[in-house]
Image (cartoon, rainbow, N blue to C red; front, top):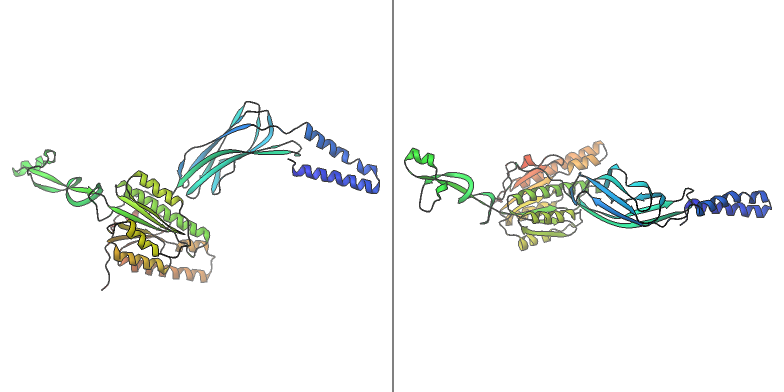
Length: 425
């Protein structure tokens, strides 16, 4: 292939030749001799090499979290002739930030030799990031000729949402099932949570006898424990587009995804069954299931979650009735923008036993992205008042958490219970 420099030299030589012939001046025609010699030596002395490389890319991990750093290692083995004046380009996926090293580097390889290149990247958003190929470009010293070859080298990293520490929070469903779990139940039986002492009876286990209390009362007493059960939790993620700009909408969506992922991980560790409904351009459902595999299913769905344009909420109630029992705890993660979402939440309150609403506040994002002026400040204050009214209206019926994006969520969940709907008469 010819480079732009080569095309420029040929055009210049042709111009000198044409002008010299028109004016019949051999001095002008002689100016093309150095150009022809330069072109000759660049073409024949530095001929195009036959590029025969084996390229392997190794990623430090297949799964990472937002803001994690990842080391990328590219190993190049030369299976052909000597290569000089080459440049290796490892294109970065969109959204990946280079933190150290370089993904563009010069290369000179002898036959049957190899080299290793390393650099580090960081991920600002959740998602799937795919490397497809490595490009090798050869240029001669005169920049006359170049050869560019692409080598397929696949690599993929799944970047999971940022996980918040919810170990100290008291979030759990009030209604439990018969299956064992980590949620304390009012049913007495085998368990770890101490409930009280009663008189020993037939069939009681000897290991539960309270010998110290028995010695004081001259009667055989045994300890009673609360059984630990598991419950059902359905997380509803509101990913519909709002009046925010694209950047603020993406940040708000990322915050909602972070909350949904962190809460699902916490509830699954309690051995609850967790399901999810994602409201976006389409409605996506993850059915109830326990365990680590369910956590992976939920995160796969969250990785694909994007801000959508779906304005209808008719399918939400239908999906809940079809796939989830009414005794499930509904945990809604929504900025509560628009009257339709508020009406949908109130409609669900009538049908379900308990509900918790976690609402990331979009007002701070709007204030940060808007220009400074008296009118904008007034509009922001009006939005804050409207949001306060919406949260107060919902707070009459269920537990509502007003969460400011960027702050820890755990303090808000220290003493949280789902509330039964208290409808006005």
